[in-house]
Image 1 (cartoon, rainbow, N blue to C red):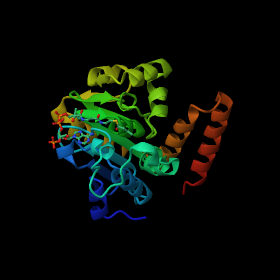
Image 2 (cartoon, protein in one colour):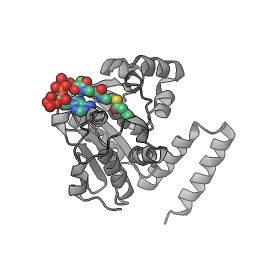
Image 3 (cartoon, helix red, strand yellow):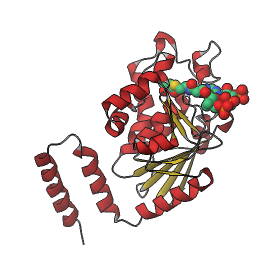
Amino acid sequence: MTSSQTELMAGGLMLAIDGEVATVTLARPERRNAMTPATWQGLAVIGASLPPEVRVVVVRGQGPSFCAGIDLRLFSANGVPGEEPIGGLAISEQAIAGYQAGYLWLRNPAIVSIAAVQGHAIGAGFQLALACDLRILADDATLCMKEPALGLVPDLTGTKPLVDIVGLPRAIELCLTARTVTAAEALLLRLAELVVPAPELDAAVADLVAALLTVDPAAARATKALLRQAGGHSLEQQAEAERKAQVKLLSKRP
Ligand code: CAA
């Protein structure tokens, strides 16, 4: 799979690759970066076609909002021009798996993904931020898992990271009230690694990217793989995984 800018633009996406850093931009600010199936398919294509030298992926949104979630016109009779309607009984698990592919790759050990969030991150947009390894929020950011309020479940891979980060009781409370979390609360709930004044968001992301690039690439990849699996392992299993990873890493040294 390859990603051409024309193909990505159909999903309201832009991709810029600068050496070890890729920046994915949600680029439909006039719709607050609302997402369609073409957006999710475009994200999947980006994930599948990233050059191997890319180590950090920044996901950002143009305009006042990070992402207002699914394009609500998909649920209307007129739909979104060029897109299949999504409501009703027509949706299949296979189709949703395809949409989820746009989110899953952001966890790959080969990269560290950072969501740079300003303004609203709602529904599918909040789940996109949750799919990233790290989140930096502008102080005007708000997060909302709106799906249950719309008669839906969050199905774009957001429920697991949400529970992992905030714990089950808080995840139930946030989803089943569909309430909005401010940036200040997000920091307390560990949904943000950092909150900065909105004009400083880009600089804060650039600082984090620079810091991530100072670490040895092979060690970074092996360490992220270890950390990602730690939650599902016993201490003994994880200790074994550490040993194996270290021996493998050292064996590849010149
Ligand atoms: N779908 C389609 N269009 C949207 C949109 C959305 N999700 N969100 C915003 N827009 C459009 C608005 O219709 C408006 O278009 P016009 O200029 O043509 O009227 C434009 O973007 C600007 O929106 P606002 O004037 O409302 O901007 P705002 O800054 O005052 O408010 C907002 C921003 C809080 C995001 C508000 O637009 C809003 O609440 N949007 C809907 C959010 C929502 O409910 N999303 C669905 C989440 S659930 C989900 O995502 C499901 C899933 O994963 C399966």
